[in-house]
Amino acid sequence: MSNHVSLRHLRCFVAVARSGSFTAAAARLYMTQSSLTHVIQQFEEGIGVKLFDRSTRRVSMTEEAERYLAEAEQMIKRFDASIADLKAFASVQRGHLHIAAAASMIDYYLYKVIELFRTQFPQITVSIRDAGAQQVEQLVAEGAIDFAVASRHRGLEDLLYTPLLTDRYGVIAAASDPLARSRAPMAWTDLDPANYVGFSADTGIDSFLRKHARGFKQREGHRNEASSTTSLFSLLKTPGNYSVVPALTAQHGYAHKLHFRPLKSPQLMREVCLISRRLRSLSPGAEAFLAILRQVMRDTPVPPHARIAGAASADKVNPS
Image (cartoon, rainbow, N blue to C red; front, side, top):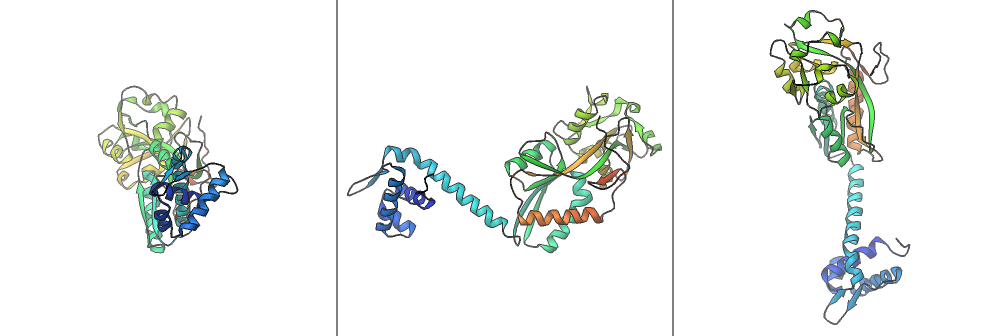
């Protein structure tokens, strides 16, 4: 845009165009009619285009102005929305956070974080969603949620993935199942395909196994499926059924009657990340929430076969 044209010119142009009257537009903008006329004349001179045809009774737009009106309105709306966002980001005293997270992270860490956060910031409420990994990435990319704490699914270019935790994949089954007789690692090839319960294709677990556990034949063909760990735990009540999940999932409250054994050959690790939009700053409220999350993760005992990102561990990541 020309250096001689400002947002003030656009607001005045739209007001006159929508009202069809300099008098009505001036009253709406709390300006004198002469001042408004001067601003419109400046605008026309700055762009070298006549915008209005004036008569004694009405002001009508020229053809050029009619074509430009919708774009001018969109520019004003985008500017006003960005300023509203900036004001919201500048305040951590009130507001609402929209978060999505893996169910295992909610159950093991986030419930504590929310409790502490509401104590420190009582005027900020929190909505938390347990959604499939594919939907989570889309929600973050569209700006429908502030951030997510989940595993990578497709790895979208406009998202940032900051590692928070890694945990090892293993088999989970009822405590009465023969698989539960030992806690020693077992090989993927030792698993019987007959009673395997998998996950639906939109989940992070299924996406990971599809990419990295290519020799895991249980993923192929007919099988029972669950879309979440909540439904999975119900299916695992059937004798003989088992599934493959990350270690943190086995810490879920609903899994207290289930047994977890890590898998080897290969040893696979899940990575849980903070998923946020690239080139978009988090609000102060979101930053405060994440600061408490990191503190809770430091203070909470790490479950077996898991480690906080950046911490030393005997487990090694081997995704091949």
